[in-house]
Amino acid sequence: MITDTEIKLAGFQALVAALGDVQAEKFIALIQREPFDYTRWQRDLWPDKSPEEISQAAMQQRQTGKSK
Image 1 (cartoon, rainbow, N blue to C red):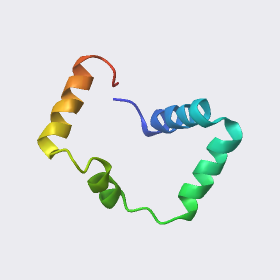
Image 2: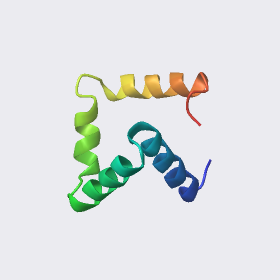
Image 3: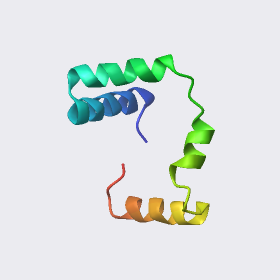
């Protein structure tokens, strides 16, 4: 298990790798400005998948070593 600080660092590094420095900062500013309902976001993330299918996919990904 990694620490919260390590998660934040890895997340920021992923944003910078995907968007570049300036756009990553802009993304963070946008997220902080807008209200965010994590429960609604999770519910809408995979509307065509059951909780069991999502769980199985997560377990498969973990077994293949793609998730730390």
